[in-house]
Amino acid sequence: MTPITEVEGRRIALSNLDKVLYPATGFTKGELLHYYATVADVLLPHLRDRPVSFLRYPDGPDGQVFFTKNVPSGTPEWVTTAEVPRSEGPARMVLVQDLASLMWAANLVTEFHTPQWVIGAPGEADRLVFDLDPGPPATVVQCCEVALWLRERLAVDGIEAHAKTSGAKGLHLLAAVRGASSARASEYAKGLAVEAERELPRLVVHRMTRSLRAGKVFVDWSQNAARKTTAAPYTVRVGGEPTVSAPVTWEEVEGCRGVRELVFRAGDVVARVREFGDLMVSLLGEGRVLP
Image 1 (cartoon, rainbow, N blue to C red):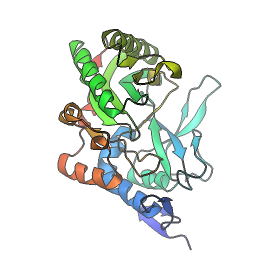
Image 2: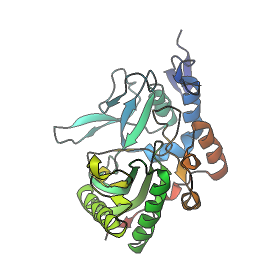
Image 3: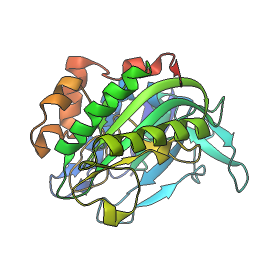
Image 4: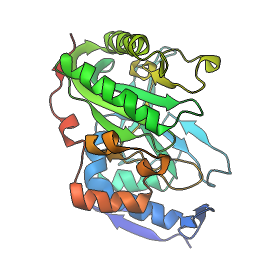
């Protein structure tokens, strides 16, 4: 019988809690739900008012993995949804606004991906993002070198960058911005990616072409487009182990000398949140106007 849990006055059926989602570590669905409940206070502000795309993996990384953008069937009526403009016509998507909605969504077994704008102003960028993706034999160590260059370059324009692990191989850089369309944010981000390639030609590539990426860091600027999304801070990623897209300090980025130094599992992130709180809290404030 599926247990019913009450969260903030909402009744939620939480299923298959003993199911092992990550066979390599034995990490279960119950542990996944416990993680999200524990980090909800730092995660929810990064999800609130942003239409969520779910990357679902109900049977773990070895099962089917698929995106769900529209409101899933069976969504409780108390979960907030909103109409989102799309090129092919408007669609309704989920907004994860509170703990009850978070736990309902986590029960789907999903990554949380969000756009760089909020539902009140679709297509108006309030975040800038760079996805730093290493092409082997490059690793997160080289991503850190590129991240430090981008941090300094953004600072020249008065923009404060924040770093988090992708939860996979690379790094994400985010910054709070305002006063620009998603198209303008994409143009600005592309300009910096091109500049980075010019300044660090042996290390950086700004084009997605795989044949160009071996041994270099691809600075993906395209996720600033209004239609694109990025893995949210604190989301658990689908993969061999329950790694998290975890905020990191610039001291950790500067000091990174090995691949495993910036790998954080769910349990690691719980401990980090208790020690540091939300390392990306200032991302939630008013952003700087793009030059």
